Picture (cartoon, rainbow, N blue to C red):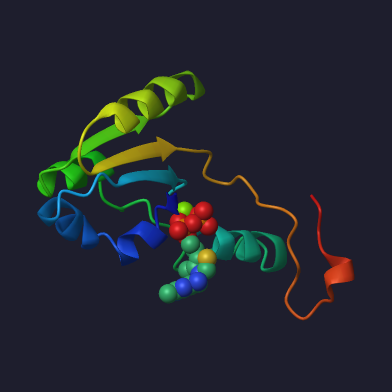
Length: 122
Ligand SMILES: Cc1ncc(C[n+]2csc(CCOP(=O)(O)OP(=O)(O)O)c2C)c(N)n1
Ligand SMILES: [Mg+2]
């Protein structure tokens, strides 16, 4: 399980997975943002987004194929189950790209410098 940002810090290991024929299945929750940092900017810096938008990130299906692996994509909730079934049933390294809401928030969140008792729940 990875974000679209974090997988790009390790994507080169697809070559390792291919070389050693490792049945690694990568599930990407792709919101086209460095979401945790974006949420910070959204809530505490008036949505002044800086360096968190990844809308020019790679096509992860094509990227999987570029390594000789298999890629799948789901863009709607009703595609999730089939995509997971197909991805898990496909031999060898697989990347599954799940496109999710770009500005979904993740909670609870503790503001910088605040104690845990002041965490935001929504
Ligand atoms: C090596 C490293 N660099 C930077 C960070 C800071 N950081 C924490 S979460 C995050 C954003 C991750 O984005 P993504 O993987 O797309 O996940 P999302 O929050 O969007 O679900 C960053 C840059 C980190 N934790 N580790
Ligand atoms: Mg992301």
